[in-house]
Image 1 (spheres, helix red, strand yellow):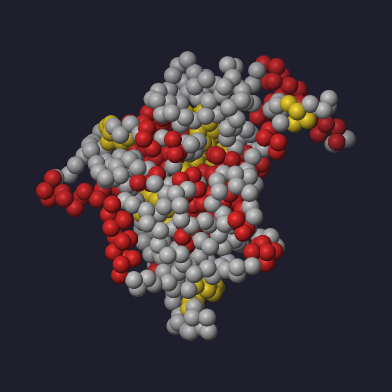
Image 2: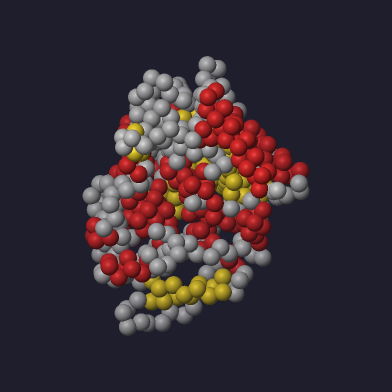
Length: 514
């Protein structure tokens, strides 16, 4: 079936009393019609257009007039309505169109307007990337700071992601030999689970049910970003170093995190690169041996998006014939033009989701970037110029009536939850925020202060109850001990406790059989 069969069919526009227009979206493969309301907003002011053009040229941020709020200003009614509706839509089978959704045609015609099937897949992969933050132990007073709080078998259950139909098979750990201040939190305690390594992400694979829905066995790699992105803008190494066998070069700091290892460490005797490739190769070989079609989707936010590109480059070189896609959020530039060209030649498909107000995706190469290609006839190809890779889905904070507009809220603009909120509400560049967006708006304020005050959602509300302290039997508030199964580097005592617990459970199950 042709790609065009997936596209929206526009019906004749009819006038409404409110001045808004309506159009119908036809998904011909299912013969279902979904009617979405939107209001076209066109700026006729030439001065505004000129100002925006100059701002784009100079990489400045100028607030444009806010779009008309299509939602009721009675936030109490809004809250009452939203809490009574599910946060997800029913999943459609995309098995016949998975290659297009996976980027075989570079998502041509699927981004503006944004196809609902693609929107759901982007949110799914974004939630995997968000999991690397939600489960990360940020507590610098914890002996396990820098680890995942849960073992891989229960990660998705704890975070409510089991609904996506994937199972985590492997955790990835990374270290760094370079000085990037606070690129990861470190514990204040002398005795910790690891003095060098940090939990950096995971490998997961689709289960049988999800595999049938999406049309192939999908292996996912999710990479975590930095803990405090606002602190490392000026700490980029800015140095490009060679990768591969051609003229491709990548940013020194990103490559160092991806490849660093040390024999004296427990978790990074092998690098993050070696860990992830060993597991991905194992899974590909296993499922190919079963006669299944396999894909690799790599996702990440911020620094995680940079590591995702390096991972995709290595996977394309290592595993021939494997469909590879990258879905990144707020990712910085990674390499030069040759790096971009080699990724394209190897068939890696990259979709970059960016927010207009976010600065991270403009780094490094704020001035010296792919925009200089227009001068190639004069300068020749410049191998030291940073260049973005792939297709871009550009979002705007100003499009959402739920977000605060104006100001310079760097953490809020860069937050992955802000990205996922905007993806969920995006229809097209010519329309307002979709009224039937399903994702819970409260998630935006998990780690920042981006929601309008009228919603009465506290800022930075996502944290452990009582900031991790528990009241013991004597009425004292103390740091709890982790369950033995969730300790990344268990002591012999903890291992013995875990084994005893396992034996006890097996004996209990055995007793129930009689």
